[in-house]
Image 1 (tube, helix red, strand yellow):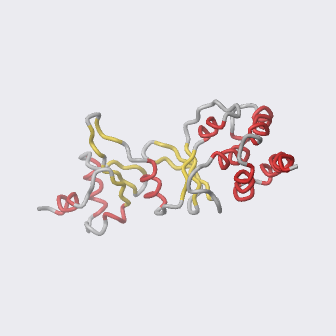
Image 2 (tube, one colour; image 1 turned 90 degrees about the vertical axis):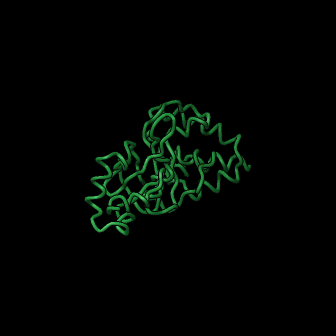
Image 3 (tube, one colour; image 1 turned 30 degrees about the horizontal axis):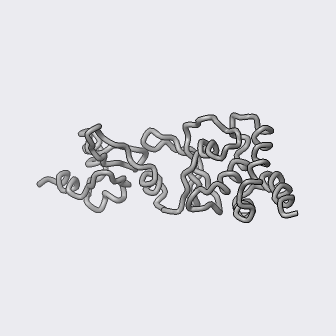
Length: 194
């Protein structure tokens, strides 16, 4: 069995590999990676990141977002979200956006991973899962990125606040809110307690 075949034995379908992961099984990792990509065994996702696709009746499947981002960051502490998530809040946002945002502690910038663009943002604090309270605060943090009329959205946010759990919202605002978001929401939350 040649060295390339030996390397292939270690690959598992549906898994994302970093170049460094494969170097423990090959002394000529760059040459072997080039060969595996050329023959279609592996797909190159970005510099030093490769995917061994799963095959279904519909063809090869792309890597799961979570697996892709976890491998890219070499970390499991991140939150993948999108401006589209705000549409579920019912505050007048209806636009659809292509990009995904990844809150994390390591990388900052826009990266193309496997044909998808991710905007990585380093944040000191973010939840493990996006709650409605977090999304409302995040919407105000990112108000300038929305295509909708910001005054109309803010007006609907103020109405929405009255229907949400005030304690959870206040906690989310304190932990994740920008100065601008706090200036907009704190008066509304204070008025609810009066």
